[in-house]
Length: 639
Image (cartoon, rainbow, N blue to C red):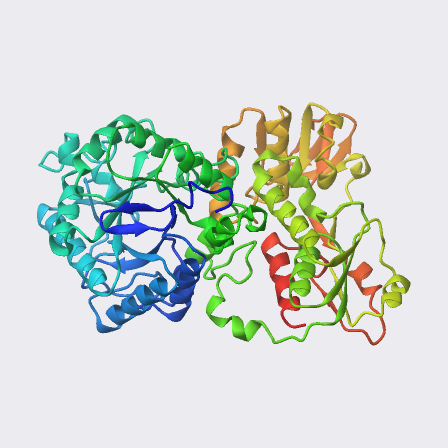
C-alpha cells in the first residue's frame, strides 16, 4: 500500500465495509445533460469513471425528492418517480458497482413547486420576500426525502446523502441567523434541528438500518451571526443513531463565503479540515468525513493518520484526476494530476453551459472519447517547439501514443508562462501542476533540448513527420508616453525586491489583478488602474468572488476603474477618469499588464515545406491553461 497505509485502510460502517477512506463528493455537473429528468450516458460515464479510479464510495448527485418536479431545461435534477428516472438509477448504480465502489446518491429538494417558501419570512428569494414554510410542507418534504431514498435503495444504491449545509433552504432551519420562527421549528437548537431529524427518521423508517445515510452540514457558517462550532458539537448529539457519516463543511452560498465552503488558492491548504477535527473531538461516535479542497494524497493521508477524520471526501481533485485512489495504491503520488482550484469545473457546469477541467481535457467528453481519440500506430517523429503547458502536455500525450518526441525549449528550464506560480503563494496549485508536467515529461522517453532555439534549419535536420508549435505569447506594450520605463507583468515574479514600495499596475484584467494581489501580499502599496468598468472582467464567476475578497478587503490594495492611463513619468502616473478629468497617482514603480500577443509570426517562420504542422496554446490564440491543455490533447489524439 505504499506510503498511504491509513488512507487505504478499510473501515466498516454499519453493514458496509469501505475498502479505503476515500469518498468522491457529489458535484453539480448540470452541463452534461440538457434538463432531462433521467440520467443520460454522459453523467453515468462520468460517475462510472470515478468508481473505476478506486475510491471506496462514489456519491452521485441529481435526484429530486419532489414527485411533481418538472425540468427547468438546465439543471441536473432527476425525477426518480418516473419510469425513465428509475431505470437510469439502476444503470448508474450498476456502473458504480461494476468498478467496485459503494454507490451513494445525493437527494435534493431544489426547484420544488414554490420557490418562495423559506424557513422564515423576510428572506430575499429571487428578488422577492420569502413566505414562511408551513408545517404541512415541512412534513411533506421530510416524507418525500424518505420516499425518494426508498426508490434510490430499490435501484441498487447502498447509501444516500442529504445536504443541510451552506445556508441552503434546508440548512437555514439550523441557523439562528436565518431561523426566526416561533413555532416548534424555531428557537432552541433542538427545535431548529427538528426538520432535519424528521427527515432522517423518515429515511430510516422507509429504508431500514442497513441503508446508510450521509449528512453534509456546515459545522460553522463562518459568519459572526451564523452557526458556530460549539452549536454543531451539540447538534451531533441529536444525530447519534440517525446518521452514519457526517460530512463536515462550513460557510454559506453567497459571494463572501462561497470560496470558504469551496476553498480557493487564497486560503491555506485544506483549511476546512479543522471543522472535521472539531467534530471528532466532540466525542461523537458517528464517523467523520473531512471535506474542502483536499486534493493530494499526502494531505489525505495526514488527515486520516492524525485522527482528524475517518474519511476524506474529494470533489475537484477527482475531476482533475479520477484515478487518484489507484495512484495511491501504486504509491505514485507524483502521477496524480493536481487540481489548480480555478473553479472552471463548477462554473462551466453551472453557469457557462459546458463542463470542463483546466488540467483534465477529457472532462465533459468522457462518453465520447472514441470520437476524439483516433487509433494510432505510433512511430512518428514529432518535434514540439515550446516547453510551456501546451508543449509539455502535447509531448506527454504523444509519447504515450508511441511517437518519438523531440521537445525544444529556448530557456534553460521548462514551464513557460506557468513559472510565475513559483513566486505567488496563492498560485501554488498551478505551480504543482507545472511540476507535475515537468515530472511526467521526465518519466517518458522524450528528447528534451533545453537552451535550444528552434530554427527552420534545426527542425529540418530532425526530419520530422509533424511539427507542433507551442511558442506561447509575449506581453503587449501599448503606446503610452513613458511606457518604456514600466515593468512587464511576467518580469515581476521573482524580482519583486527590485520594485519600489508604491506600485501602480496599468491593466486590471485577471493577470493584473493577480499581480496586484501578489504584490500586496508582500506588503507593497498597490493601485490597479483599469480602463473598463470592472476589475478582472475576464475571470470566471466563482474565482472572481475569491479575488474580490482580496481586492476589497486589503488596506494596501486599491482599484480604479474607468480610468485610462495617458502618461507615465518619474514618480507618477497620469490618467483620465470617468468624467474626463486628469488625475495623478504617485508611483515608485509601474507594472504593465495590458494583455498578451500570440507569437504567431514566430511560429509561422518555423513551418517547413511539405511537413504537417499544428499551432497550439497561446501561440495560436491567447487563452487559459484549460485551452492550452485542451489544444495539446486535440492534436495529440489525432496523430
